[in-house]
Length: 487
Image (cartoon, rainbow, N blue to C red; front, side, top):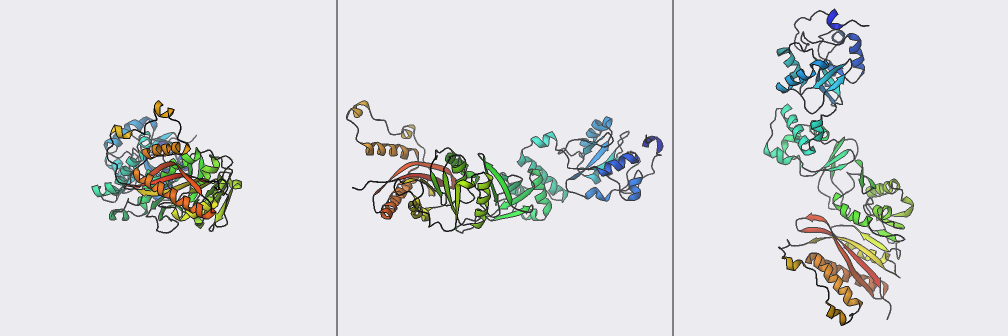
């Protein structure tokens, strides 16, 4: 049984700078060596210092950004030490008290050097303490419950204070209030951390942001490049690569955020697609990307087969991975680049390109089945004026026909269809409806010219996906297209 340190070791002489004070009570040598092999780091340095109580600070004190300073003591002194550290404003409330080898406990402190100086200047009478470092500390309950945005500001203030800088309104406005999360990566918006002061903090800034937001990797968006592929401009701030995995409604997507676009704002349209009944149908997705809509059609809407057209090589790589990731690779054929070989195959065509997919309309008409036609889902950005206040009477849909009108007999299917379209038009903004009518006329003309026979187009639905910019909305037109019999 090893002898007790308090019984065998005489009090130490007054310590020079950087040496533990006389009231430092070390664990016996056999316990110290055990602790050294674990993640806990005793604050002694040099071979001699590690073998005798009161040695100099360990050079490993600064090793590893996940290690934090703490004061170790016996459990019976824990609450008293906690209160005194709180009074001295040294207790680090971000982390909880932890057990240490040998039956002791450790209370995290904000600054190891300041804590050591406090021990020297204000020796807490009767409390036996030592300075430690804890690897991968557990967050406190309060820190765990704190909203991420609040944690981020708290940690940034602490970081600036450590660099001798103060907080300001400019910095407050420059801190993000929202971000995208993809697995262990957080993607920041382009309009944050633009103040010159942030650059002075170096890599510590991004490490602090990632830690506060619970991420391992960090990236920042720029403006979407003005090329035909709408390539993202994303800078990787922390981490080795940009590949992430994201799950929407049970569909798994993997992609490189620095090479491929991913819009969380399209989730409502993905959910709508997932609810469609496409059993037995063939889909052509003209702008497949990484499979944003191809996958919901296959995974949830039960489309029999899909032709996915894409020409961005980075998106193609992600698309291949995503089809396999979701187990639907046998029900999809990828058309890289040119899709002109596709003709007369589709029951349904998705045109998911904004701000406009109009260049793809002739191709969509060509791939629709010539004999039966099908449905086009046309994405488009439409500008609309701010809607004026609407009175309750103006919000009512067109009235249903009265019994007297019903007695006059039906006026035919065309009149019923016209009434239905009036009801639909009453539910959407006038600008959206005018654009949809123009699109229906244009596509009817394209189909008639292509097949040398009359076609009929019918507006089934107009879906508002998201606000794209002030007074600009991303909408989807569901347009039914059917050939008319020759007369």
